Image (cartoon, rainbow, N blue to C red; front, side, top):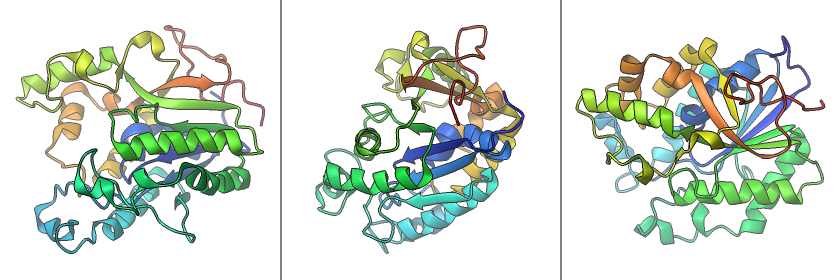
Length: 288
């Protein structure tokens, strides 16, 4: 990797606060520390999230409906841990999109949720960000949003449509992914501690587990994994300290969170490559 990424710019598009840290926290921290401009756009405030902190259960949408405001604070704290200064919500100042909840639930039918957003309108809000920031690379979800959550799917649609509509041409686009080999190892370790986090023994039933040959890039962010773990802890309503995320790091080591995987869907793979032929630098081949 280069010693400095001054002048290089990355844009990440995520659905809810905490998605960015789980998927890309080490990548974000690494590139920001090396001088790249890293911009995060979060599409909703996660108002329908399950609250894992009992003393904050009153924030739920079924009670005070104040979880969204609280998760804004969590996001700010997480970004501080990762060293990210430019983070914003989609359409901030123009309108807001509410967390859609899971497919088939009552919140999913509300007119103000992200799933019900007009695609072209939402994409135009992101186009404005793209043309302001002028990112060289874009990171978002695949076409099923990783695991089928409507906000993740919509974030994918909005990100990809905005990249088409923008006058600024993004050189490389990546989708978050996790290889089956890593998921398989995680499943075994979680079984050892009695966790049924994945809800199945059949890896083919796990939507976000991709065949290893579809992995085009592996970012080794292990030097920044402590920052990622601190950011995960900042999202305390969503990530329990005694839950499976931290159990994995206890049983597999912190590298389970330091290694982050991507599929390249626009642009060409470029050296340097690792022993498996995967890119080790998302900015490889980029002209800044």
